[in-house]
Image 1 (tube, rainbow, N blue to C red):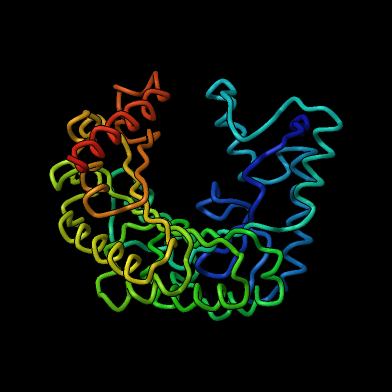
Image 2 (image 1 turned 180 degrees about the vertical axis):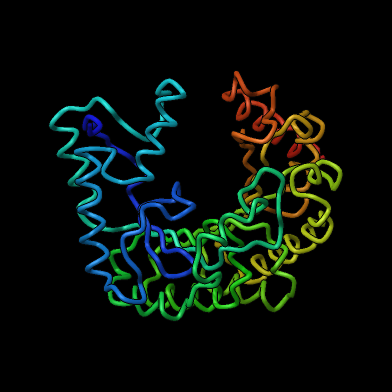
Length: 329
């Protein structure tokens, strides 16, 4: 017997994802490529966009129309339908507005590499299942640019990262430069562990490329606190040197971009005020633009904030104010 149809509005379908082998899937929640519906090496942008719109329409009619969507729905059901980027009960007007919003493609996730220089504890990269679901580990970024070139004017956002380290692909920085020269208003965001930006020349080229935001994953305020998740391979002092150089290059160019952001996942071992304050003090010292503290789903998320995640922002603001006061004294 077929499962009953379940109408579903999913906010993650505001994008499509180009994986490292050129295949295209529906969203960043599909790491193992269950929802693949095309390939940039064989399909045009227009055809990918048409299929994307059809996928959105199909999922709105029935979440079970795509395998990964079914997996997500089952996980949501198991968790008790907690609030998220989705709707199960919606009006005809909400349905119409949703379909109208996604009637063209404005946002892309591009995976330059499906491998990583780190194997963080709990990350999917540690299990090696990401590379096993890709036919190639490095995306041909020149081909991606050719695929997008005539449509860049409609692309508002490119997230140049997915399940791998962006800067393992040596074509990433030239790709950014090409995109920004052809479409300066296309916003490009990269999340990275940063360690592959290991030369001053790379860092200068990156700042000059016009990239809009760089988010650095550094989950602690010291070598000791980053190691339980990021392992001993991550070198905290090396990362600080890289950040200092990027901030200096940016300042020397008199540029507002890229926004330089520190992302800090809160685990049981790094969630004290003292450890968070160490990171905030370094943000102030180096001259980064911001720091965000995030409660992860795994492994060992902070018990301190698990039942009161809203306290994270309050404590961040308090610690930032204290750090700024000390800096001005």
